[in-house]
Image (cartoon, rainbow, N blue to C red; front, top):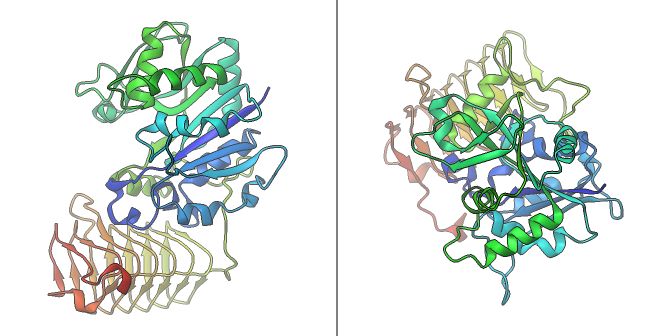
Length: 417
């Protein structure tokens, strides 16, 4: 039996704000050294699914660079699978992807090449560990046309997702896409296993359906249920989070740092693979305090600096007397002396001057964002829930006080950056 995985990685990710201004959402850093897409890719190879296609669209450069030939995941293969990245192209018959189903439909000539028996459709922006082979066995035992992975979430969050209702045999009898008042808290995880010939037919039916959004949740799944296709729910009870919002992204990091973490990275039997750079070991100097934090290779934490409940990507440099709490710091950021950072996310290569105060974790965890390659002036106060866009330089500021809700952007034209 041949299974091909298709990872949808084309989302703009606008709810992650400046973190996706220069990269696709699945390429955003997670847990210091990883990218979000690493979790779907690693789930595939750990489940012995070694034939993977990644459908990219929005700002795919960093995603393409990160995945490369697929070597970190043992997917640098030509004959028996491997990983291929597909991007949209303009022609008489194709255009930019309209919805999730349209992304698959436009690439289906490539997806069905080699005649795989089943197509596993995944989202590239979820954090979880899952053995897809168990789902495959469930799918086959029920002779399902489509199997959908499901999970329960707090009822107050359920309206963000597709809601599932199934009978005692797990056959889906009702599907509601993001209802305002969800009747239950069992949701669609965005993990679909189709018989290949069924998916082919459903995509063509949808392609010609007037008024369709060309989306799996809005169109394909409801149509299949209406037409009495064999659609089954596969219940999953592990950790899973859609990091599509800044709040869920930040909370997923804090989950890693909990006293009893609900998601465990340190499992030698289920390794999360990633592309890594050669960096020296982290250096924590005498007198520095680091508590309940993840510190990646190449980081330097100087004397008298304090780091608590935070996650550092490689190469972060923290000078004497700086304090960082409940924050996520991306690659090669520099934090100068006596600056304080609370409940904030700093993108790559941010430079924070001396004696700055950024964010405040006492204000209901409102998150402060600093965009990639930006410079924070010495003595600045960046209040909670403020945003500094990417590429901001000293001349872009009118004041060293940036109030809550403000958004500072660069005044330079794109060709000047």
